Image 1 (tube, rainbow, N blue to C red):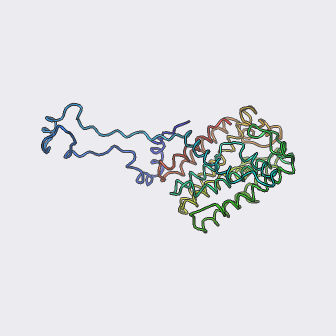
Image 2: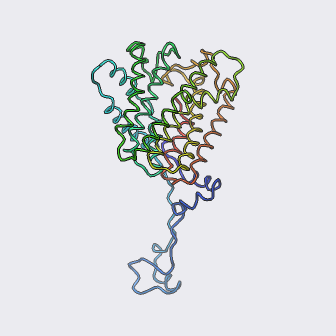
Image 3: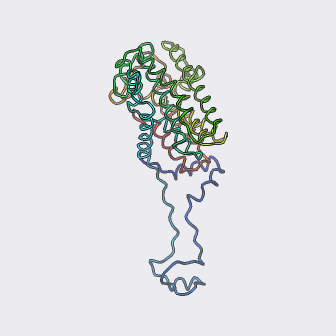
Length: 366
């Protein structure tokens, strides 16, 4: 999983979209050599015929087409590097200051580790369409702040009533329920402030668009909608697949979608680019939840770093409960394929992080 071979992906993509090949064809074919030009210290006069070539070239000098080198992407190094950058930016953005208790509570959950998948998706999407890490970092941090807020509130006794998160006691177990609620509120508010004040080198119209996208993704038509329907579905026996998909498309996928879309907007992607990446993100967002449901019933709390089997205890509807483990895994593979189809036509080298992230989400073990 530490390296991704892009050649097989490019070949499969070319079958899906012929136009995608023209943008990257030169990357995957051997160099073409002309028989009229030879570089060798042993040649003393112009070469004009094939017989003369064979007469003056040694065995070692024989011309051979250069073999195309396999395109490798080191996913592990990429994730470590990007996560380190995100962690440094978060540490700097939310410092320990007065009132000390609320900032300690915010930092306790925000800096507790985690894979930083959402902010890295934001950065990768920005770089894919021609932007750079620095212009997307404030939005990437804002997304992680909002994600952390949702975890703090999710763990509260009035919601999932969980005691463990990322291998540590949950925020309310350390700081109390009152401070945990306020820490989540503060992270939510600061996320938007950070985008507005820390994003540099981007036209104001893009920043306004980003703020609107993010607000919609987490409000009553996004993350909150999924959470409410999820709560109201506990104990119901007639919940179908469409109902379950609504929950997870909103509760989980919307924030992952926003991560990618924000990066694409900030990086200056066209409307077509943004919409293709939106579809990519919707697929991996749903994929993330399908895999999460599978892990919840197949892994231990120690392996997950959070309480395992809690959906079963709460009598929540999950993909394994509706479809079974095997069909859930097949559905996950289908979502991964559909996600990668949306990347056809982009520069394969720049798309490598998103391809690798979709693989990581599909095959993660915690």
